Picture 1: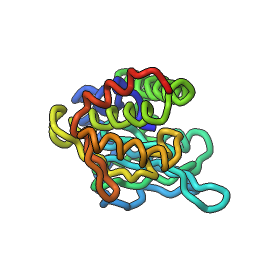
Picture 2: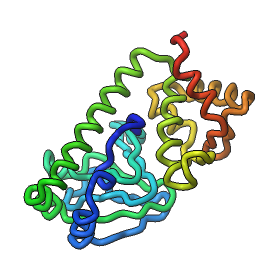
Picture 3: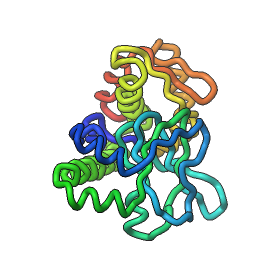
Picture 4: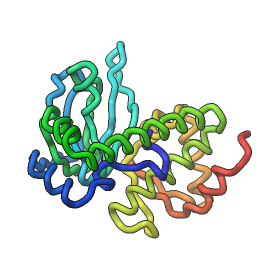
Length: 229
């Protein structure tokens, strides 16, 4: 899932000196919407730092079907853990819309973190923040209903996506299908469809093919504080 609103992002935690140095270690690459950054099972040789745009983390099931396991956005690092643990990509990473990345060889990225304490601290802080956010997501799934989880997800993504694209006070278009949303909150597609229909009638959201626009986040915030039903 996307993580909590306060989740720390590696690139944003770096000072300008480290950003400049890390840029010098890699190359910038732009991926078109739908393009894979990497494929599950490939050798894990490079790390991706997302400078702008969003990606899906996709897992392949034993029956060949794909499952959306999470999202990553601006400031996140993608692909570094697989290189340390298995040496092969453990998931497919696919661009949602245009994505600008900085690509570094995994060994050079690791060496830079080892020899530059501020960057290493930023990375550890970002990883710890992500782990805590993952824990909160699991806790949330156990203690809240589907509508509440969907509201929290949209608020989180709106904050990050809206700030990136238009400014925090403007409506944010989220390029996600109802199947994507259902996977991310651990609910059925029927639950998502029913909930969005209700929110459209209240003027909270507008939906279209593979996208959703949050129009009134105050309604969603109230829903997150409702007692689970």
